[in-house]
Image (tube, rainbow, N blue to C red; front, top):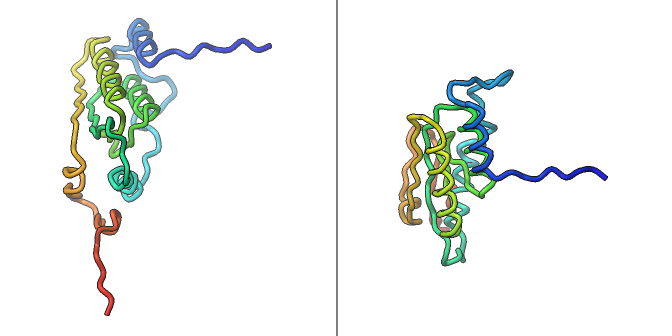
Length: 159
């Protein structure tokens, strides 16, 4: 019978990285700029607007952005995996949107505070609660996308 490997929590993994001396170390045999495949902007916006178009969102859920500037590739990659595993939607390389319970929001906040304090760094992580109205009124600059088509809010008259 194969021995089952015990899963290690995100926070414990980050503490092990710290204890192993992640400061200044490079990722061996890995490209440092790749943080995983990111969907096209249209796909990401589609995911974002699917969240706000839900007819019945649980009342104990909240929307929030997680934004970061993390220098260490190892730490950054672990934070990305953690946020995806928790159910956050990647909006840009360093920006995630989440529609999760208040308890999940608090857990993510606590864990990211502890990760930040684990090692000597000049990183920043920002978590911003946001309302659906603000997301609906956002503007996309730099890409030629028709947001009204994505969220299907245009009205059509037939004669």
